[in-house]
Length: 493
Image (cartoon, rainbow, N blue to C red; front, side):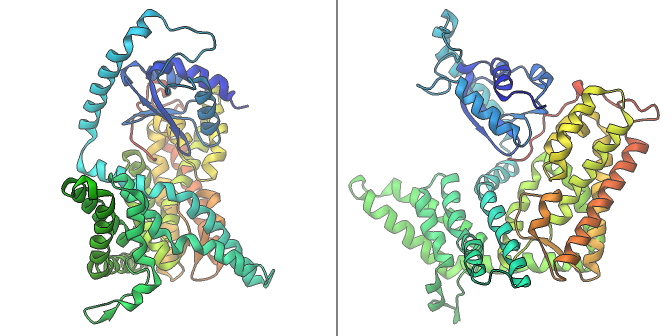
């Protein structure tokens, strides 16, 4: 039985400083994200001790790892506890409670203290790499649900077409599945402008130039442009340029004319630059990315798979996996699937195997075995954070042996790529068993699914064996107390 979401929300609220300390509430697939006025008021150790909490990640937003399916219910329950008027931090949440003297007079001082602490934390995290990766995630992560939905529909439609079923319906399903990918550049442009402080619709308008069929009438250096040339990279560059132009216009155009001239100058300037430079340059980069991925798997598939499968969990811990999102999206847009994701998905298989070994070895650790039972189904479906923060990372060595399992699974899939059978995914986001409906390859669905399944089994087996033999010590006890583990790592959005 999962803990009651309302009880969990009620337990979390005082441990993050109460309603007056919460500026905003949001969530992703596995994490409750809180913008706290004063992060120092959060009791990290007490939060970790709550049954439903799998980990805590202090970052620009205070993140409480709860797991898929749980986090959205707890977020909804927490929002119900917060004041309905005046914002999240406007007052106490308990029904009938009245603010005390300290609360009544503390708001200005609390806000000032919180602002200072957040600024200090931002300075510590404001390395160019971290900022760039965070912005990349903010642009592409909101697109993942549509990529998943359309990818599944494309896979189903392909099965129907191959089987000769529902011939009157498959063109409609194909259209629905393909429409988003045909216009993904527009959404990338919208999100890019929003992320960099521009007007989102202007970013979308300039990015739309990339996919507009009429670009075929434009010639650059004697060569006609191709609609979609440059793809998401061209759209990102176009929207970024549009944002710069818009800000420049706002500073220099007279206020009376700003509403008329700034949008026109932004779209014209950035649009011309997109047509006569950015589309060509981004198209060359996109082609190079596709060629590099094909060469890598064809010539060094086993080694590449071993490295990617083995290092993906540490990349997630450091937040560096976000740099791969534009690569995946470019490959999907260019080739119809990304060959990198199935290799990286093997990291989750290694972790599942490691968790299973911990479950078998630590027979008397009821608390840990309960955590594994609740987190393992999500791990099998490719959501690894519950196992990362609840099991492998707190224990220490099992995290390393899980990486060994991921490396073995990646090498298995990569080896077949060297033999000429590639395994790809038509969308990013899911892994584990959830990736089966999204698989695509050059040898048909049967061979593709068999190789991917073989990689998962290899990852499970090696992760289990390595953890059973080396991950818990000879006595079968924990190598490090779970309650004292440090899990304050930047992770997924």
